[in-house]
Amino acid sequence: MSFTTCSILINRQPGRTVVLSRPLAKFLQVSSGRSGTLKIGSKTAGVTLRTVNRQDNTITLPVNLVGDLRLPRTGKCLIKSNGSGELQLGPVIGILTSTGGSAGAPFGSRTGFIREIFATGRDKAFHVAFSPNQVNWEAGEVSGYTLSREGKWVRKTFPLPDVVYNRLPSRRAEKLASMENFKERFVRRRIPLFNWSFFDKWDVYRLLDGESDAERHVPESAINPSPDEIRRLMEKHKFVYLKPTGGSLGIGIYRLTYTQGRGYFARFRRNGSNMLIRFGTFDGLMKLLRRHNINLQHYVVQQGIRLIELDGCPLDFRFHMTKNGQNQWVAAGIGAKRAGRGSVTTHIRNGGQLMTPEQALTRVYGASKASTMLDNAKDTAVKLSEAIERRYNHQLGELGFDLGIDQNDRIWMFEANAKPGRSIFKHPALKASGKATLTHLFNHCLYLSRFRARREG
Image (cartoon, rainbow, N blue to C red):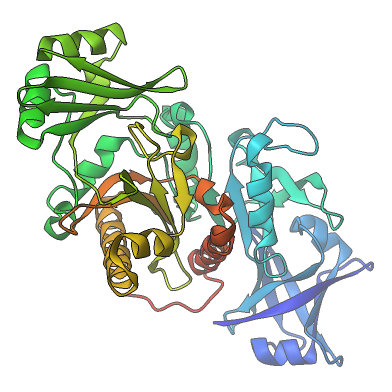
């Protein structure tokens, strides 16, 4: 298989003859006058291949073929050849999301992020962002949004893509049977779709169950806990976290503490403030949860960990993991988060502070040990990613982990997200890491769509 970059031109004359410049034809092992096929996304056409004596990497398509193949645009993209007359332009990279914003922001608050995705590999691929109702399975087409040369969003019809990056934003919608069936249709057409759906918290613990090397990094946890189970874990570990199974952003989390001789404490966030309430009895603590309409059937209780601290505040780390062009997991972006005073979590919205991991770990350990601890945490994040991937039934290309280091230097995993947020990349020192995650994801799309060399097995 041969891969290179080419420029697409259009011949206003009708026909089925595709013309390649001589250097491009030589690189792709194409001889003039032979029959072949040209493919873009899901569209294929029989063509006659001809070469022309010009010294650049150009391919010229007749105007009617442009319509038949739903060519997204002219200009640069990748081209590959199997050496037997089959050429493919692309790849067509699809971003599955929801639409419905304004003309200038068709994806609402996600528009800027999707624009960044499109900018990555702009001269090597075709990008289309679309929602489920914009797919025409019978025609093998998707009527989604792309960017014009002037940088404006335009609606255009594309072939079905070569690979799909799932960024649907709704947990509830993704649980619908109709959405599962929709995504399965890509699988049946052998179109890779990665980041299948959001994780619930218990999904991750279940996936790591039996993965002994990875499971040792997961705190003791129980789903749908009874009050007796909460009391047992509190007395065993001194404090626990009560977390909604489908939650995110630290919403609905309670830190419950037991101190012999002093009683029970609940720390939580309410109406924008951090709250701490003491109870003389365990029953008093349970009454508070009932008053807050906490249904334990939708919660996980998790062992509390005494984390390393900075200025007396706990510290944890967000690891943004991506697959790269060699199908390997990479810790592409890492942010350190220091909890706000009295906060139950390290989330920035709850008063936490964001910094680079090097800054935080150097202040805790000193420069030499900081480097060792960061390397250990990276190795752990890769190990966890590989373990989850082995047990998961669908393709993954991106994961987010909340990791912590306890006061004995042991590394723990508290959360895993299949569609991690990108708030850490707002930090000026982490912007380059944010771009690196998109570069890795683009290269992984090339890998999945077979637009780059890959070793099988």
